[in-house]
Length: 234
Image (cartoon, rainbow, N blue to C red; front, side, top):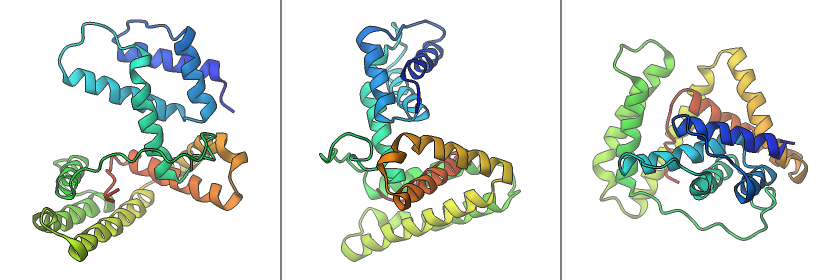
């Protein structure tokens, strides 16, 4: 189990770096809030991702005059945690939050989703010549998505469902390629990291459900290690 005090100190150190070295103490109510994240089971990496989201949004508005306080990041941290829970299949009851359904986030338009993942795949591919099986697979996914893009905005009914199903198939192929691209040591490291992420929920989940969640967490980490986007339309 993560020590909440050390978890809060790690958050404080990370926030200091995001604020360009300006120290903003995580104390009092802020400390209790961050300890609550740890007790709920928010993985530290997911909390830091939420802080990144908050800082990126604030920076998009222009130069910041004041350092970001951790309280400003809470909504982004909880959103990142909800995204992670959906990705690995951890329900609210397993995380100790009760059975109330979380509000569903608004999806981007299907066409906008396709255009965005094409751009992200192109970024992951880079500009050099294809050097690996993963690189060549990315080229293939980009071509497939470019073929889908012209009809994504006007598709309805069965045609739209077919595009969504195709995105799910491409995403499964992406995960398979990302895992195959790992060497044995890196795969072992990511599997251990996935198990650590799910450790706070282990006692609350049936063994088969936990195994599926750990595998999903590993897939997410393999995807991130390769810098690849989620192709599924969620």
